[in-house]
Image (cartoon, rainbow, N blue to C red; front, side, top):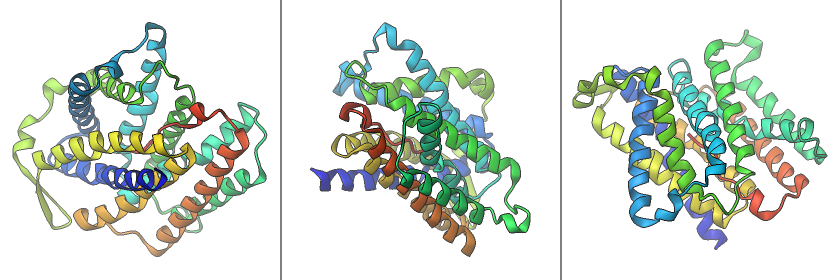
Length: 314
């Protein structure tokens, strides 16, 4: 059971790794970041709702008393993470944006300790410090922060929304199915972002063209389908099934492989490369996040059904 869970989580992380690179092809074809987010969420939400309606209709039932939670989840845990990440990758390499987002486990440590006032092992704080040091190496602070400052801020706020996803996942109960929540969350994002993305003005003709980045050319519609089907629907379904077999800490740790996978995919499809310091700093960030999140899971000693939250990739 555990080996199967690890294998499923590994595949899920690699599926998610394609989201940023595929989004860049949409943006290269003329779509604005919010337009790319809207098309991804609308397509994935519709597809997942249809799949669940056929295969697991009970998953789509949301108790009336849980509607405010579903709305907050859609705005913060889905819309916030997706929109801010997609804007961040217009100013940063995909790998760096992913590293910033995966500061989320450290933010969870700080929230649990200082807002929920839960006493945590020293390892939780040691992991947080290690992750911050690693982030400083990634952005090369001794050079006056060579990474785009606005992109850095957007990536960190995306990480805060990702942390909100972890924290909101603690309130999952038997009355909510994670897949149904994800499906309605994506559909809700499409509705919420519609006035901003203005899909009625979207350059739909872009999906009939090709886009070239870093010497690599892909059909835009093909990139879109891969992003929706593989990097969103399949990735989320696999992720949920993995977490049902693993603890939240282990599932989220394996999900952090998305950082490495995203950097490799971006190198292969976009020609983006990371410097030596960014690679070293990235490994330190991941190590710190691993220590912090594992210690948090151990220190809080929450009930099993509350700890089994879904990792929050992009």
